[in-house]
Figure 1 (tube, rainbow, N blue to C red):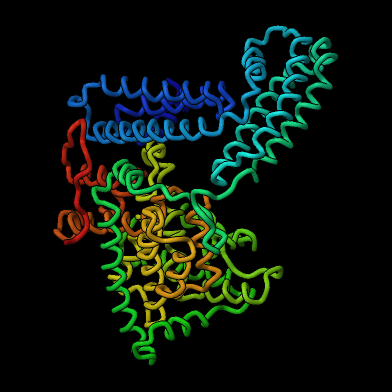
Figure 2: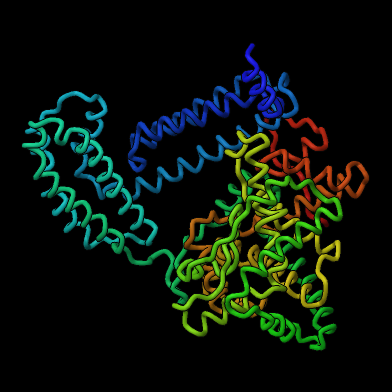
Length: 561
């Protein structure tokens, strides 16, 4: 055997030692799905939905045929994570198919058009004259369809957007098929070029018009301008089950209210220490006004990041690879993005939110006040080290095949857990720091309260905004951006509760493993980051050497009574 090959084997040996028996099936599934996603490129078509549903069903059958009892400890964890993943994705895929069927009539004219792009996959010579005719007739039919639906708008912007995307996907798939033949087949080019130009133009206009083809019959604008889509109690229950959270929505709201009350008590202590008595909102205003002058903030963010890293290493709390400390970067956030993300975003790059010249004076002050140094003491380390940057760094290097199982309860929960843990270790230097960290803990509690109540139908977006302003002390524009991000962004309905609830899961697991002396804190933290982004209940099973049943249902009660 040649030396370079030996060296390569040694280099990758740790990875293969970490991988379980499920590594190849998981990788194979991802390859299968990617191949089918490329093959059936129109993802808003019955053909696509049917084929991907069959994929999930087939893989569930393959998984169930495995001998669970013969799997290793990691293999059993991967089995349960994979099974949960397939069942979750099959369920939501079927839900998406139902939603698609509600709007698919907008392309009732498309049968022959779809036949054309399906035929194109054969790479055979087409009947160009017939295709030109079908394009011309479809163009006329679209015009009639357009007129016929004008009196029947969709009852939500989400349906209108999906209908528009359905036509756009059809157009893009047709264009790929057209481009395959155009200019390479003279007969096709001669017959089809002009009909395609006319059809493409009509499809573009039709797709654009559908975006505004709705009236809000389901969810009315309450004056906030934010129109989301409450999913209801049953859908929340289903989603919590897939996230392995054995609590009801109301139980989580009750816990958030209990934690919020604790935060208020701690705020009063800090407020009195700062000389504001029991008027903690006055103390909060004082802390907001400690903002850094324009132009200086990026440098201070770097200092906060380095300070957190130094603290972790000084107290031997976690292993931080040298490359992880070297590789992170900074970037400034655009004014447009700050409308939905008024605070930091992060990972390998921490995106810093601060005013730009195009903002009006009020928005500039809100941005500066909302990103003051004491508020940011909790959020910089949340985004970088030991938070999202270190998480992502380790996810790429330990059981990377598990990244498919990503859950925000692991991702956001880990970063939030460190806010809880560092508070316990007196990381805040003074009362101002405590106010800043408590603001964020109150904010996380508020996310649980307002987002679940919204999806249960108990709060409107405007009430959510007012709640953040009145109860947490947010700047109004920042509160509005937070609510808009929650209900009109690309976040799932449980994303906003995942911070605090995931944090409590890690916190409870630390109490079980570290506070009882079974592991050192550093061993605990290092172990967590080698498990990748799987549901935390499964990490608990692995770290405690508990063997779960093949049909395990969530049962870990991690909240204190």
